[in-house]
Image (cartoon, rainbow, N blue to C red; front, top):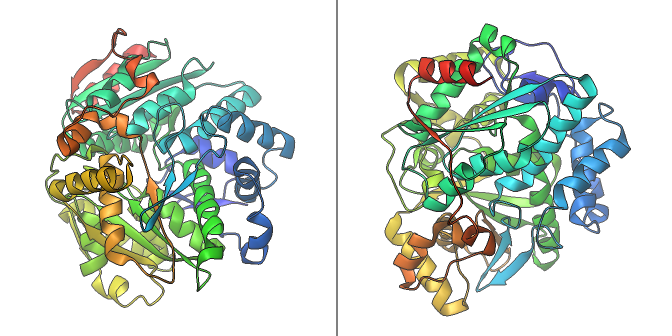
Length: 461
């Protein structure tokens, strides 16, 4: 298996090289040359445990780049940190099924990929006797999951940017209470999109990237997508036997497009998903795109689902690349136009695409609170606000013939203020979160300026 860039400016590279490169050196995103077709293996894959399934799927993307026993060890270590024996249990709630992706160390779906990526980084660095300085921007959950994935690991430093006072209190404390010497938290005085802009600018400075061995842990890193593909297979294969068509609908709360792109990749591999329902909050650039063909950024609105408060989805370029049939020249034109004008009108591409598996809708904070209250009162089930966005939109697409599976992206205890606002009770809690209350914190508050962040990194390395 080899990898290439959406911008066409790199030679084919192996899996571990793609992981260490993170963002492609030509400014594009790394994608596999092909998506393996496993449609003839679905019955066998359906019998596997989650770690076994992860090995079966991820190994297709690794190829012969990592010995089989080593890869199995990395995967087994990664999922040994999860609280639930099923790793991502599926529960029937009302007319929907909910796959809980929040049983990892930081109680968010990001752990599924970032525990794997952290162990993968450690393996590669030890093998090559080198070091890595990881840069990442977070809208809330990626930061803590990335930090917990690499904290204390040798030969790795991690610098995480989050928007100052625009993440939940729990998300902030999960990041800033980690005092390991290799962890650097930065609160930027701006939005998540500002953080992504800064990270991209630093990676595009190839001299700086090379001199300081920069690595990416955001969902631009292909290893994260590969790890997330697994739970789409797991959920669809568990539920397809209850479907009259043999297909399943998946609803995904979406901000940065990485999670749902993994679902798209899974469909390219043969997973029986009839529809990927993209659910956004009021920051609905993606929902607008799939309904109008216009991709146009706007101002970021602060909502009860902060991890989705994003206007520029960093993984969108991957989907756009395949939408234009892997035409590198066309992709470069589109991305240059967007960088210049903040707008793309490609309605003919998306609206006339008969193979499009996406359906998209958006909700608002009132919808979110309504869903949290409804599911608690009717089913005694607590939704976090991001999952509530997805559940509310999934209900609009219920089909008696096909089960609907919603991805629960975070434990409700991470957003206790929203839960209390919805149901009037302070009951969203978790032992690991209570333990954070009195811990000391460390964080630098800096301006959302590329040179400021560059100087800080140079000072700390």
